[in-house]
Length: 532
Image (cartoon, rainbow, N blue to C red; front, side, top):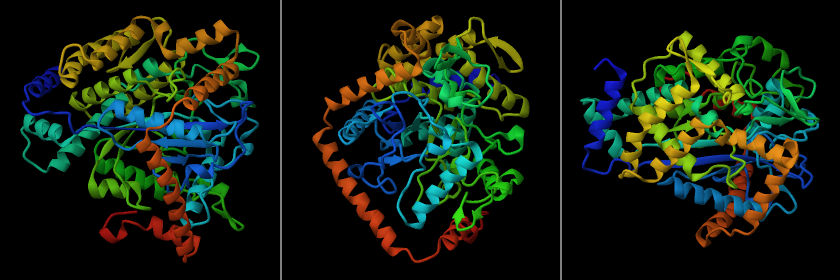
């Protein structure tokens, strides 16, 4: 049983023989970012619409880095169909409160007038609100504000109790179920990194950018036209080296360990507690204004950039690493998908069905620890695919050797076929159909979203801005014709009202200083014997 293929095959075979429903408890959630822009395509200068609720306390409609960067969040739902329907209703609700503004349809922003013109998100005057804005000011000081308005979709996934019980029985383990699940999910996260290049190849939709995005920077990007830069075979410039990364090689970043959950928590805790000379030069409290939360390698856990994260639901103002240490991994977050410009919601059903296959494969496949050489290969493969993924004959590094991207992708999709039958419960269900669509993209790179973006731009004789604006207007028209379900509309209206009440209550109850609030926040964990 030392051959990973035989371990994988054994697990699949034993799961296929289960009599009880294995996947009824699976849950899917989506987080979708989108820039509010003016009718002319410039970043919106208006505040977050009050009718949508308070961004600090609304569970489903909030903001990310900028006041103009909306984030729409679904709850954990029982199927991809439910998640997409909820996300579509969120979009429809938002569009009916945007007046003349648009939601930008692509991951990469456009018509930027310098980073300092990008407004930070504002959440009110409570200490929690102030902390969120200071954190974002720190991100801008550390990495530049332009990088922070790149948008994407995060795919959240968890397996249900029935699946975990069956898998633990297959493995013959009689120990603590939480320890087993944490260990298997950390292996799953390692495998998601190993084959993570597959996501930008199949679903990347950012092969070109506005020249304004890299103003003043040297780059080897080519000119598509006078306003647009691109790489001819790029899939996802968002995931390439022009995107937001923690630059470990420059002495200001971190590579978290995925060896175990304890090691992941330990390495992130180290980064939050360890001063960084470059960030110390920025200063923390300069005069009366905080420029960042601290001058450490990471201000907080959320600053760590990774394509995947282990996640646990947090209590109010609970540190994420403490939530993980206290209660284990609740779900896995995949952060690499671009916004699909051809889908009004930013993601399509076939893509989400494929993501389920990817998740199941990565938890069942053998997952040795990642050493330094493999870590370099993972990072290299991701950037190569992002910049040159559709290039004929492109090779990636696999087990220390070069292998053609196409060959590796075909092998993976072959292995997914049995998983589609498991998840669909039949030979020709929706996951099998999605798998066929992905095979078409591997066989013909012109079928990928990134190739379709460039083909559309050429067919219409337009640069990236004109293309993105055209698609944004089309999505706006689509959602203006859609009305949320009565149940969702009532929910969104109630949550908008309640979120404002909750924000006001927080502000009215505030007594301690912001300095004391921060000190108490970062001291969490010491009382239960864990390092903060």
